[in-house]
Amino acid sequence: MGEVLVGTAIFACLAGAALVSLLVYERFPAHHRQDDTGAVVRLAANLFVVMSSLVLGLMINSAKSTFEAIDHNVHSFATQLILLDRSLRQYGPETGAARASLAAYVERIVDATSATQRTPVVANRLSELLLNQVGDQLAQLTPPEARRAATLQAAQQQLQKVIEQRWELVEQSDGSIPEPLIVLLVAWLTLIFASFGFRAPRNATVVCTFLVSGALAAAAIYLIVDMDTPFSGPIQVSPAPLQRALAELTQ
Image 1 (tube, one colour):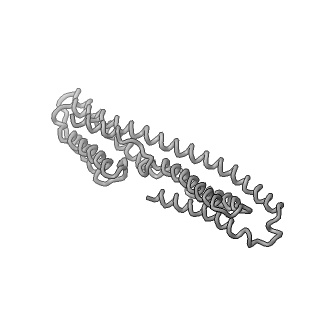
Image 2 (cartoon, helix red, strand yellow):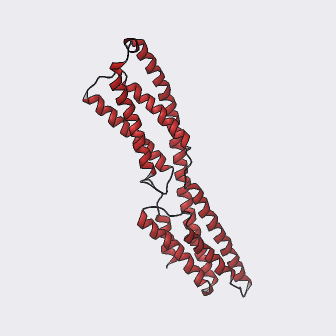
Image 3 (cartoon, one colour):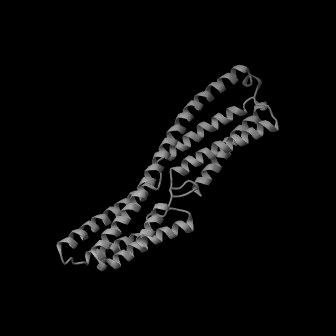
């Protein structure tokens, strides 16, 4: 929802700047409407076009890197869940309660994914308690032999890895693009669109061009910001790895 409001605000700024410039141009004094003035305005706009292009490229690269990193971490997280369940199963029937708690944790996040269209690897208190419960249940086990002791130790290490990966995903979920950079980019684009309206003819074609251009530019920034937060919005990491992990745990 936040990204939608950002996109709407950006569209209002860009289209509004172009339309206001178009409307007030005729009211400027004659010496402000000379060719030399228009040339200077276009020169300044060209400067901001170059700077905006560079910043957009950096934002796309940053958002892409964040998305790919989180997608990789989700796959790794699901794999670690499966390996943990394998270790618990290898230990013996005494880990039945721990396996049930682990399966309940994975089922919870998969169900939340289906209900909200979000990948719910987030700072959820109940999910954290379920993982802690697995650790408590493992701590209560007393291995009768060295082989089981080694298996239990491996399972505890894998559980610790799962918890660490979960918190890594939590920390990555807020995105990496600084808000001041987005504000600065929008300010530059607003000036560029304002220059479009300078000396532009007043007709429906020009107005429609301004509106469509503003909408497309705002949509592009919206998608970049949305990609930078892969657990919400239309561009999300796939929950399929977690669903496959749940299928493995419940076999």
